[in-house]
Length: 147
Image 1 (cartoon, helix red, strand yellow):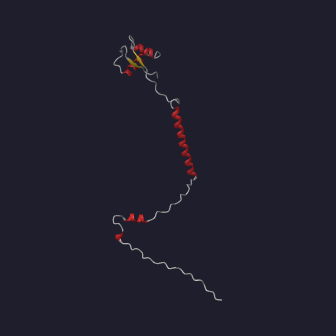
Image 2: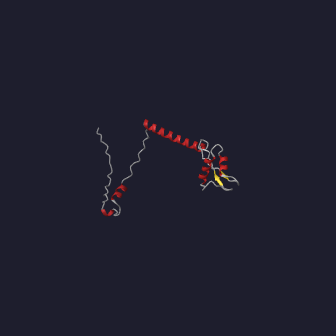
Image 3: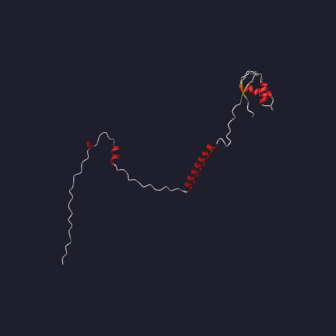
């Protein structure tokens, strides 16, 4: 018994001539780096590895978040309770109008009855930039605060 091995016939591929590159085929105005970069395909997209935090990194992230949260809470509560939380404004200055027949000593004595009227009168003169202790009816005087 004679067995013959099967023979596979593979068709021949025709060989095509390779195109020849010449200098005249390249554009003259394009720099070499641009030609090389354009000829290279883009690198394949890499899969991003998941972020791994160490113990110290978790501590830093936690402290940063806690600090930001605390700052936000302080800012919000300060905005709502700023006026009521002891932020004092200086009192508005009191202005007195001199009546007919009144003197500066009378005004100073009425304004601060427990203090020496001379010291209060000097404060009134300084606060209002008066030339002397003479006042006239209808004149408006800014009174010193009671500190």
